[in-house]
Length: 528
Image 1 (tube, one colour):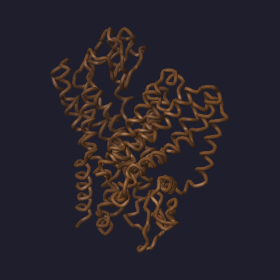
Image 2 (cartoon, helix red, strand yellow):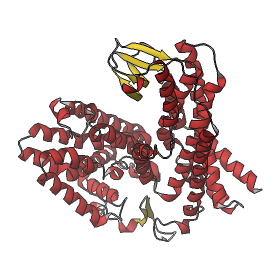
Image 3 (cartoon, rainbow, N blue to C red):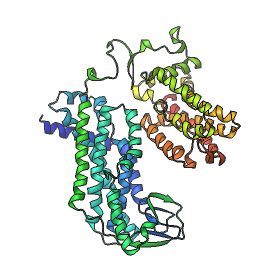
Image 4 (cartoon, rainbow, N blue to C red):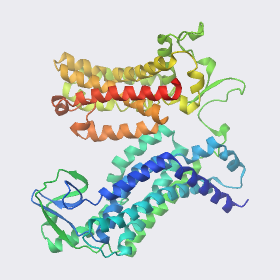
């Protein structure tokens, strides 16, 4: 088999594996829905792109150029985040399916393989982009302001802006797979999207918003000279005044100059470089080349985790070393030890950090402890929480673990308590400091957060069997809510406004719902 045919097989198999999965369908449906809502009706109570005040809202006429560019921009932002989590496991899929052993013996160099993985990822994301393009085409007729279709004006933003960005996302996914553990990569990517893209927007216009918006602004100011003096909106602005006056202007689209095209080709070349860089850390599916643990005798039972391969004989599960025991205390202690062994390299440093967080929460001023230290304290353990409820799915040990009588409930409670103890250890100092300062309600809000986080983690872990869903949603919720000051999403009681408004009551109820539905999921799978 030639190198080219092997490469094409890698691309084809990787593409087919992803488009047949449930996660691809979910994100695809979300893309279609997003393509619809990205073009709000004139009377909608939200806007996505334009300039406005309480009295006037300025936007372009819904022609092909405006609809295509608006949907393309917001699709790029949307898929740059969500699309990564659809395509960031191709190397692992090849390894788990045994295809990697075939590839390891094929005349296919590491750079060619990682580039092929990036191309396969790109095709998956490209399919989603194409579906959104068709949605944008339909939206021009649904909104009905201009029925004449300019196919190039509608399509060109997707070709020039979105597809190069998707290729970069595809390459970064391969790089993260070969360079970082899955959980660390999931979290790092969220932060890269939240902070890195905005910081780089002036030097590298990855999303293309600077290019498109400047062209729109120039066209709008010809008709409405005061347009740029109003508030600019990109994304979603809900509750925009319904009585506003709509001021629409005609925009014919971006002029795709040679300089603009060269800038997008730079993004493509950057993606190629990232995918080739990934080959430097790729171990070619050679277990001997992995740095995830020492060699263990093939005859010795092992516990496999992200931290490495650990002989089962080294794990003392509570009272099991003295004899077989399935009491709740033994189960709780066993789950705690297994959780801590997920990241043995943290070790004593983790204990010191936990002690420092507790002491800091107790000694710092209440405002600083609740508003600054608590969000940090409940971000650091995210990799521990994300493992709740997933171990059996990750290692295929479900039938073994749940073969004993009445074990489902006890093990579920033990898992939840482990997550809750992590919440208490890292956030307990803030709670105690609030109580000592007389802010009992504030302490209750933090306590509810300590209940909510493990309930959310266990619910998602049980129903998805994956760590990355929690890692993605939790970090996003943490950023938009407590860190950005959005009161309705302050699940941890870090904002004084959410405490005063009783938001914590809502999260108390949601925590119980997540706990109950998570337990039902456990029963559904293992309880018969």
